[in-house]
Image (cartoon, rainbow, N blue to C red):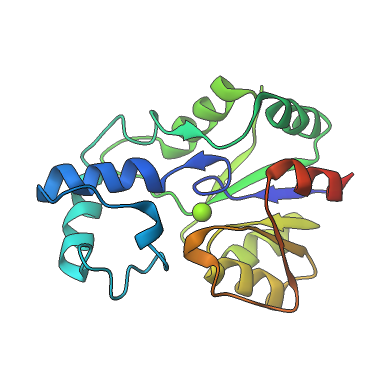
Length: 190
Ligand SMILES: [Mg+2]
């Protein structure tokens, strides 16, 4: 059994710090996370296409942003992932992109090590995640973005799981299973 995990929105809290970043850049007031009902931010009162583009570009110049993200998992959940990783049964698959001479693969692996996975395998891809899921032979895949869940569910044999978030709640797919707490998902894997 090989488990493939997304990073942002699954094990790392990206949205909270990103909203703080948008607030700082635009000078707008606090943006409540539950106003984000879709990660494309379509129709969001503050995060218009122009704001999103500006903030994502500015993020590329923030060397510490990803490094400072806070984990979404409890220590016991990290220990379970470390065990799977040591047994060669865990890989991370992320759409994080390299920028300005920064080794995003290294940065992500270091962050994971700091939070409990001693020697993580991290794959950064700009392509459809189904391609790497298929080529690695991932059996169980987890992602918080509905586009990735649909892609992997429809183009691979992997079982697909999605953490329940405000921004993916509208999405339903017969081959995508939702879970609440990460420990619920781990119980399912066991
Ligand atoms: Mg994600």
